[in-house]
Length: 144
Image 1 (cartoon, rainbow, N blue to C red):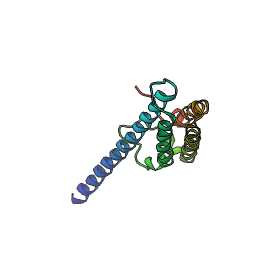
Image 2 (cartoon, helix red, strand yellow):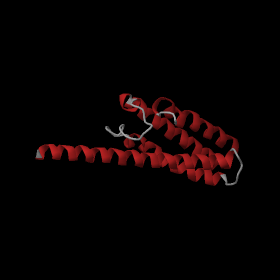
Image 3 (cartoon, rainbow, N blue to C red):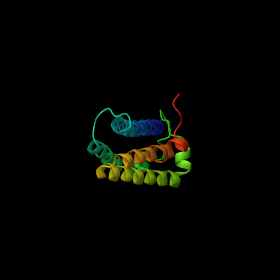
Image 4 (cartoon, one colour):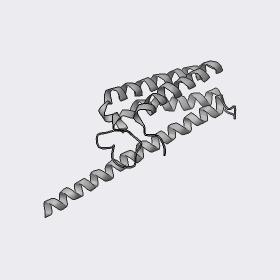
C-alpha cells in the first residue's frame, strides 16, 4: 500500500511539474506576443515608438528564442497546452525552426539598429511569417 501511495504521489508531482512547465512556457510566449505587438504598433500601425524601441524588443527575442526547445521537455505535452505531439515526434525539426526564428530576429535587430524603416518592416514580416509562423503552423493547436 505504501508503495502505491508513493508512486501515486510521484505521478501527481510529475503532473504538477508538467503543468508548471506548461504555464512557464506559456508566459514566455505571451511575452513574445507582447513584444511582437509592440513592434507592430511602432513600425506598421505607427502608434508611436522608435526603431530604438523595436531594437530593444528584438534584442529580447534574440535572447529568448534559442531557449524555446528547452521549454518543451518530455512529458510537457499533457495538460492545458496547445502544443501538438508533433513537437516531440519531430524534435530535430522543431529545434531547426527555433534556430531559424532566432536568425530572423537577429536580422530584425540589425535592421532596426541600422535605422532603415523599410528593412525593419520587411524583417519583421519575415520573422512573423517564417519564424513564428514556421512553428505555429505545424506545432501549435489553433485556438478554439
